[in-house]
Image (tube, rainbow over all chains, first blue to last red; front, top):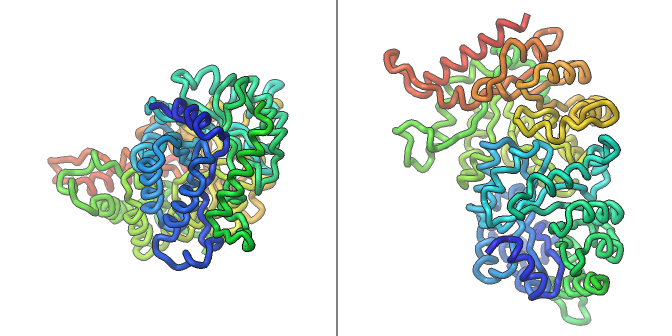
Length: 275
Length: 275
């Protein structure tokens, strides 16, 4: 099954546009996991088991694993997801960008080694830096367009012929790069007007939308700006707000139950505005 | 010692602007290394030993290691370089680009885990995606500006207010990001006029210049366009042409001797135009 079909099925099955980001930060792990050799796997597995029926996708952020020499735990997490929750797509957040021969290696890393359904990539080096990922016809290729961080405007908002650079990226992907219908775009939740602009340019293309939760984007404005006619079209990502939700001691919660509560709250908050 | 000082010393000591790129492709390894568990380390070590006195830098390309689950061999190569050739800087070619909290993890990956002297990064997400690397004051941060691949023009050549995007990047780095004198830029050899433009914008900032050798850039035009007043300022990269040089059977060469011959030829060809 292609990434896009898997994502559509997950939107329906879990009635959810929520993407759960897996950014494991050992310093924030609960005490019982501290110091264990497979703490990262154990933490992510608990989060996955607690939230799999609330999410349309899981998004492991490879940087957190790479900094800790924990690639094998990332492999184990992806394998666990594929076996236990094969209906939920894995979006590997890697934001790679390099020339063709090197991009082929990164595509193998994402799709073969980790078995991801989709990967995030950076458009700065242009079409031939993206093409090797597109060769994997059943996978998704999610291209950075308008990012939610403060410096996102430095380049993305430069005016090129009356249109900011990020809109050129959206147009290039929609008109030229998405020949096989496997592309998506990253568009931050912190700029709803720009999210709406991108939606107008790209039709029903899936958008990965970070920036709600810890990054402060407004859910109502985000959903209104980014949804498609049928109320889907987005993977709205939340990482830290779910992973490191504060357990409610009175309710006897542990970190995983707290994560589930926040994931459900976030999914439901999103659903209120899907129309 | 800072990256910039180490690089300057290596330019002088080896009388070389040549950067040897380490892109290990197992399919191209000589027969005696095929099938060995540490083939990648053994191959790179032989290349390093054969070329260390011809080079101003080594540039491992992390994608080749990541695709093959060979991060431990990359760690071993970097450790070997630091111990055996501490005077030659390691430029980790990773081209990472992500928001601040994630970029901190990538900076740890490059500088702590691999002990690189410098790392390549992507500017698309703007200043705060680069700032976490700049916190490592003794390390180099080499930012993609104008790349040598065909699709490089898709975004980098968009005209923004009379100036292409890549010149905005050069200007941003020179005027705002390089406050500690630790930045460099990636500018491909395939566009000498644009290399000259960047040199005018950034003064003596070091440039990492891929695109000679297998990618076809012209050495004379590249050196003339990119050198500083004292005939340095560049790391001119060659990877495949050196790594996979054809041994001269009559001269009894193996792959490492062939690599040394091509590295010396390339260094000398560059030096003819340094003035």
